[in-house]
Image (cartoon, rainbow, N blue to C red; front, side, top):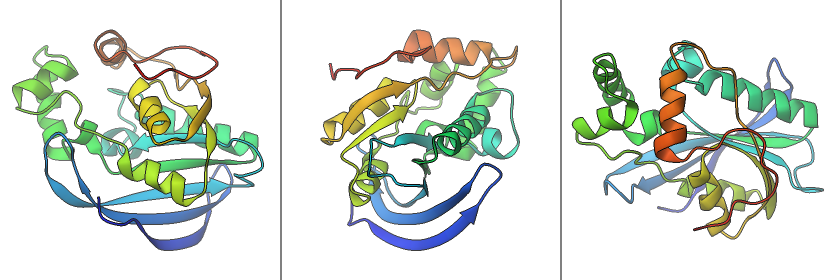
Amino acid sequence: MTKLQQVVSINFPTHWANFHLLAFEAIHTNRQTKTQRLETVLALTLGDIHSSPPLVRIHSQCTTGDVFHSLRCDCHDQLHLALSAIANDGAGILLYEQQEGRGIGLKEKLRAYALQDQGFDTIEANLRLGHPVDSRDYAIPVEVLRSLRIRSLRLMTNNPEKVRAVLSSGIEVVERLSADVPHNPHSAHYLATKRDKLGHLSGFVPGVIPIS
């Protein structure tokens, strides 16, 4: 990864709260695919993020869910859950990073959707298209947290890989908050696959998830 650069700092009023939005850029080399690209990460910050461990959500871009409210995934509802929780807390950070479709991009994610319509799950579809199960890493979001001088946090996620990425950077995760949202008939199999094959967590589990 090339040196992280902050490129934008603006006031950002939203439905939930009046956030401060920072945009960061860096050339990112994916550790699995070895491909390089310019990646932008947005940091929506609210309140005093240094007086106590802030609530943090690292959210991977999902155009189909975040923009079009697709019922095939839980991304839209998780994004809104995080923004609402940060607003209710009065302080926190939402990091929005560009790793669509677990890192394979929008076009390939839609091709994977076509395979899912034929009965394959999300993992089987990625593999049939020649992609890793999950090609994301969280190097840039973690570097953004470093640049914001965050030494400890409360992390909203069900993905143990995000917890491990933060912990391995030396930032303390004092609490994991559940990112569970209601499922529907279109998302039930997708959520079961994340839980059963990717080890995603469900429900509130206090404390730190150890690296193993």
